[in-house]
Image (cartoon, rainbow, N blue to C red; front, top):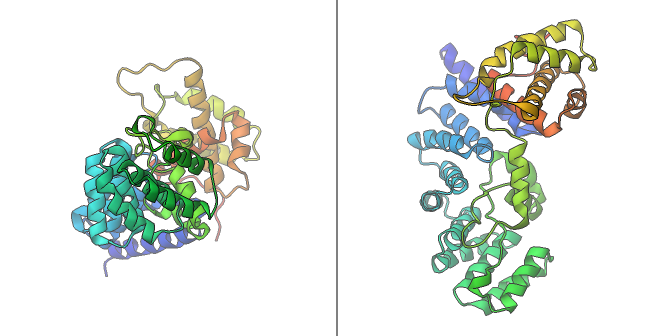
Length: 380
């Protein structure tokens, strides 16, 4: 076995080990990027890396995640690849494409109730085809009888095709396991005869069960409901709105910035903010020096876009968040026992802002704990 092949296998094993233990699956993003570059096109390791990248990035960057999913599907007909691509297209508003992708996912995994639910929900809500949706949602209900979201979607589709009595029976069974505001609103809509001019605002479709969800699976329906609130942000637009849960997606997206600030911070700006913030952190002189090196290495990522103009308070906040992320990167690399909240407080930025910028730095620089480029504490 050649050296490159051995490195690829070792890295995949390391990723699998980390995924099984990591509180935040995003911790493996740098390793997945490295594996995707190292593995040859069409290999099992390449498919593994690209699939996990797609699943982890689908909520924050669906367009980019779709590219990774397509790389998987170029070499293998994979139900998770199709389902992840479908969720990407749903979030991007490409509903017909999403329907086709979910159909392909179901062709590979016909017993998966979540694929059937998402397909049925899209047909009913996004494409206004409730008669085509009922069969898929019935299949989903049979496979996930405990799910509140599936029951609500099934009842909604039944009512829209005129089967209000059947919809009430489905909802009544679900409400025996517990009620909610959503169920109460849906029941009121059914009591009114399910008028089309006042369509009920459904929960959005439950997303693909990705690796990011595995820690929640033991929680059953409660875990899936949490995922649904952070999942497909576009599935419920059109025939019905997303309801109060839209704020959950907005909060998630705000904590994971998609683009650099409008103007690249200068080295002097970063150095000044870093020096002030790190003065309140228990970091030694070597660690502060490595922070400056890391900031310079990352500066190219935050290059300005053409024609952009940075100004005022938003630009200063962006520089503060980047500096805080650089400081926390040293904390992360050197295993310093500080939380993100503690570092964020020293720079007077929000934890979500620090987390988002740190995520970008970690992926861009392939940062890992003990990274030899920036670590000052070498453990044996």
